[in-house]
Image 1 (cartoon, rainbow, N blue to C red):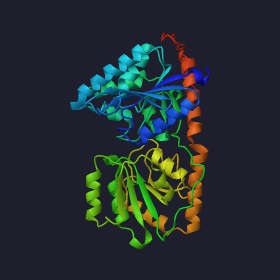
Image 2: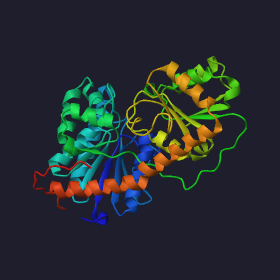
Image 3: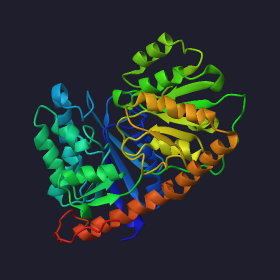
Image 4: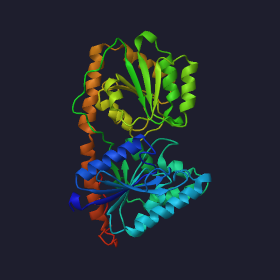
Length: 403
């Protein structure tokens, strides 16, 4: 099967413009990269705001949204929204069963249930990309903790998925702990568009720090703020925090209480992060939970030196002391020490670390290479699963090759 004959449905719990997080940005970039390779891509997402179109054409990608009053991965008191999502997704997949070959679900949370079960019932390969790894944060563990039938939904997703994308060794280990066979797990990292060139950073005697991501508890941005506030003011110019989320007011209040109004800037969500990356010397993340951080990869592609916690996937990206500096998640003292080390570097060492970070992103995490690996995986899943155009399937029993 040629790429031009492949047709993929990507299912995700929120999408641009209602969400600007790493997962949404990564999905959009991947969808467009797949389309450039001749793959027909349709995105299915919730429609949480009335102003968002029910259907639109985002370049070569079709986006179909289903009106819900709450996100479909919440459950609990929002169970009605989840049930509505199940009905909408299952109905769409059934009615359009002759128009796609593979179902690709972004993150194995509660919203994955109708797509995974429908795919199994319709005889379509279902590929699930895990969003987060690590104790307490792994996707299926989060679903299992739901009070209302959480274990049932988690087991159903685990049983129904044909294959899984693990962006880190931690996620692969988490899947194994759930009994997922290694041949069903495909290690494919996130990919980023590598800039052709990086303009030299403007120098004004200080060092610019940047933090990018959703302002949620698991990102632990409060640790970054406190560690930054403890730095000697003559060593650093500013910290820019890009992103929005439920913790924003609390974090802004913390910054004010520490007297950092003149040094810390909150931008909120931005449509284009590249201008900030071009000027950043150091990228900081104190997150306790990740899959593989898109923001980290983007920062490295622009040569910003990472000072980041050892959340899931980070050890697969950053070589400590070579392409960045690592610290233990939740260890605020170690974070402060690593920031001091970064600020005390000679210009030559920081430049060498910047070059190493950019080289790592270019050689191992380019969007083009990641898209090619997805195309190959889609094709293999379709061929090995025996899927045909009319939606009828004869299972071949072929085991999946790890790639």
